[in-house]
Image (cartoon, rainbow, N blue to C red; front, top):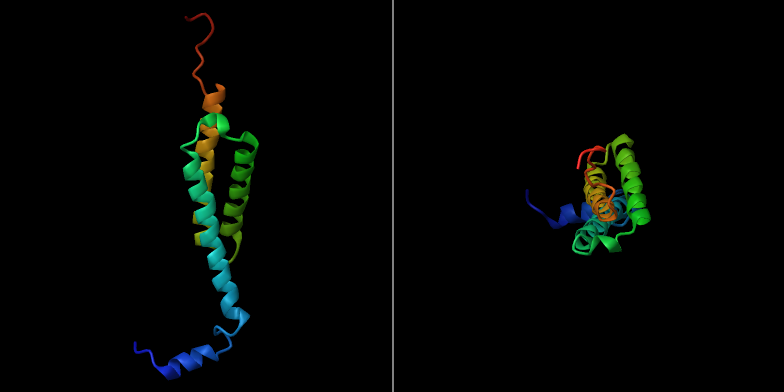
Length: 118
């Protein structure tokens, strides 16, 4: 495919070209998805290095609910938004891991022996 000045002018002046919101709206939406993924997912990865005592149970649980809701939204919207689904699925896995670290530190996930066996 050869890119010519005439093709560029036609794209530039088209009803869905870069002079319209029909172009910049979707570009901004994709930018938001990428930015959210970097900020949330990478922040969760950085938090894995912190001691579990610093994990906020309430905030981590809220992030789990938030990502779960947006995973459902991304699946149900037509056409399906697979990039948004992947973004929130990866964040959900990081947040669930953080929540399990918090629960282990609090003693909620310890194996309990049946009474009478010591």
